[in-house]
Image 1 (cartoon, rainbow, N blue to C red):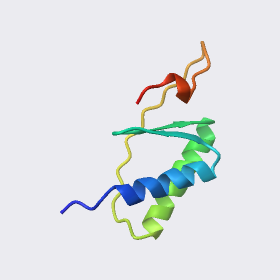
Image 2 (image 1 turned 45 degrees about the vertical axis):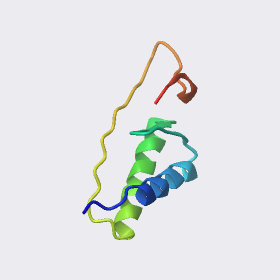
Image 3 (image 1 turned 90 degrees about the vertical axis):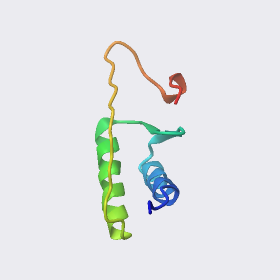
Length: 79
């Protein structure tokens, strides 16, 4: 039996937004836009709060895109 992922995902999205990050939810991933330090702080806060809520195991797969030649925006991405 696999537990539903909807509730934890919504929980994390709310935490990301509390950290003033831009969030775009797709069918298989969630894109986050913001300062890299803010992103890692928010991800750590989400991890700690999920464990405090009783979630025993968390798996995160992060892909980071950083460009020095142009400004990226979530509006430029298609999930």
